[in-house]
Image (tube, rainbow, N blue to C red):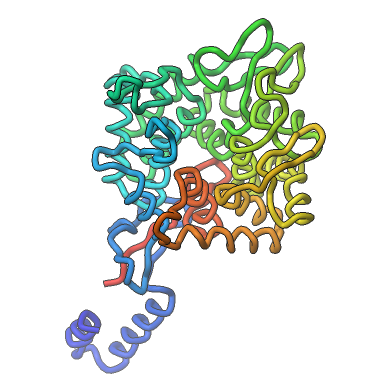
Length: 413
């Protein structure tokens, strides 16, 4: 109340009515949660990042994000997946971390993640004049040293990083981010986009090794529709709108019973089961439902995309749990999906107005807020949990043009 008292004293000469107006305004602000939201357009209208609030503040903060940063992000900006033998870092992890940092208005972490990616996954060649595709995997080698384990790129993370940079440039009003995002998107279009006979533009999973003997392997989870829309909006001369249309054809053509596979292939003018993994949908495919759930309802592909994935909703209604693995062609499932699956499915249930499914997801995701020794959620649980809970809690959304609209807030003082 000290700040309010000072304001009242300064206004004594204006009369009692003006003082009362100030008091009423202060009470209204407190009732609204002590926060002023950013503009609906997603502009950077905030004076302080959300991270300035303490965990004990009545205004709160994104606690799950802080747990993720504290557990997985190293001081140099490297995100480590401790559940893997090589203690790996992937370009996927770096791209997701940058997105969460942007949602949290945490520019310091965003820059740390970007710098580590530039220096280690892109060998320092990551600027607007020379945007190299990052290597997808880095970690402990057989000789005990650390470095790149697989130099091939991963197109999903490349697309996310380009999107992160373009949105960071827009929201933080920083042209350097925008220029790098444009350069990376151009590199992706050159190295990871192909024109398939009978289909058109499609994103390859990486720059090398996915086209052999007339068969092109593709991954449905590498094609988040809101991100493709954002790239198309920022770079209208690129292939992104065409890829979005063909991504829907991929999902619809490979999910006859409403279950997405992890991988698929284009052969002889049609989508078929992947020659290496078959039609199984599991840890990759669960993200297809996530991206569909995050797509704005006004997008012309939103409803058709969700309709093509109805099998998962029906299965959860029947059994109460998502299958860990499911055959896309027969619907035969096995196992029980882990916590990460509920993170991915929360926006999906929300988009479908499935209150029961969303309630189940919320119950499971509550484990992300716990701190039980020896039972800390693994990397993938945390990541998909951040995507899902952040979205259903309204911390961010995407507009019809694919722009990120974060709910940046000012901490109470």
